[in-house]
Amino acid sequence: MKSNGILFIISAPSGSGKTTLISKLVDSIGGIGRSISMTTRSPRAGEIDGVDYIFIGKGEFLKRKKKGEFLEWAKVFDEYYGTPKKYIKHLVAKGQDVVLNIDVQGAMKIKRLKMKTVFIFILPPSIELLKERLVGRSTESKKVINERLKFVKKEMAYLSRYDYAVVNNKIEAALGHLRSIVIAERCKIRRG
Ligand code: 5GP
Image (cartoon, rainbow, N blue to C red; front, side, top):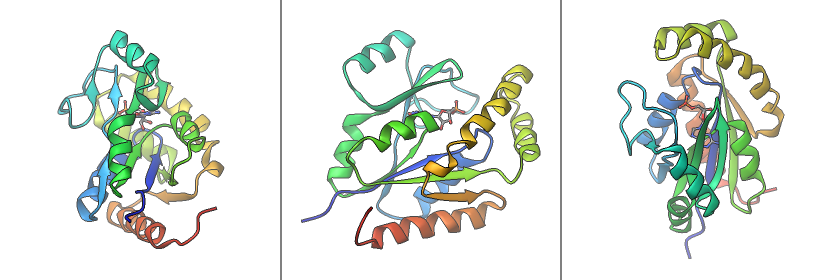
């Protein structure tokens, strides 16, 4: 019988380059899928509904939350984000691994579930670089960028609750580390 897949929970301050890293990870290693979250925030330029996120209204999100449709959910910067439960459970039951790109609050909720999970925190090389990346992306206003940078400190306090830390200094090196983690976890005999 095929055993259940593993949930790889990846959290990182925004601007740490995790979205690119996760896409590269999923493209470069077989048997792993990416969870597509639902969110109430507006799409950024270039984002595609159903690919980057499933964009829904607040009313619909709250209705789905009430119905228990999310594996976890969180309110981040005044917008709701949630991981659809049904799809993830279906993939995991088939033996497929899944990557969840979620914030620290959501990650802590996943810790309470009885599932095979691995928690990975992606770190930016420095706060200065993080600021440069957020400014360079020019998708957020100055006010939002400052809010996000303040939030980084809060998020970093959760680092000790994660299993692995990967510094995203050079993307290829960070990708190599992520791939190694996935491979090692697949070979693991016992989980604590
Ligand atoms: P962004 O708006 O920059 O795409 O994401 C903001 C934050 O929300 C990031 O930390 C991202 O990981 C997190 N996030 C995205 N989807 C989910 C989700 O389904 N659940 C939770 N808890 N956080 C999410």
